[in-house]
Image 1 (spheres, rainbow, N blue to C red):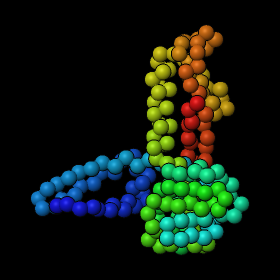
Image 2 (image 1 turned 45 degrees about the vertical axis):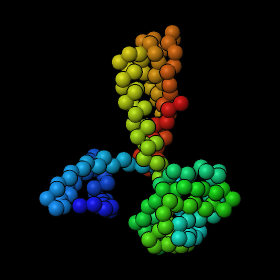
Image 3 (image 1 turned 90 degrees about the vertical axis):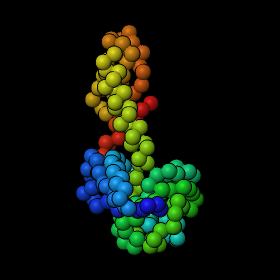
Length: 180
């Protein structure tokens, strides 16, 4: 009737366009639809170590302070595999990422990881793509063929202003569009 519940999705469910589940308790039925977002892998490697709520990135990894704050850290192999948490602090000098909650199983130097683009950034990229489709009805869209799309405010690029540019980045099988 009340409380917090954890839902663990199977791998195949995270690949679905939507996941619908139903909870029944004390005669009350609640349905919910999840819309999984595939997050691009921006970094992967083997950890140099870990603690209750941190992971030390592989030796030689270069980052700036705060660069990965808000990203999702997925432990995909070795000790602690299958866990994921949001990064709340990333420190360049030590290569240490601190996550929002303690790991159930503390990672160590056998742990492999993937750092994933935050879901809200993936959603922003989808919104930008929707805006391209909308704007193309009002103006013109040019594909430069090099992973860059320009959207103009009029039908003729020569006499129109560029509203924005989308640049495509591909990591693995995931395309991400960045608006500038």
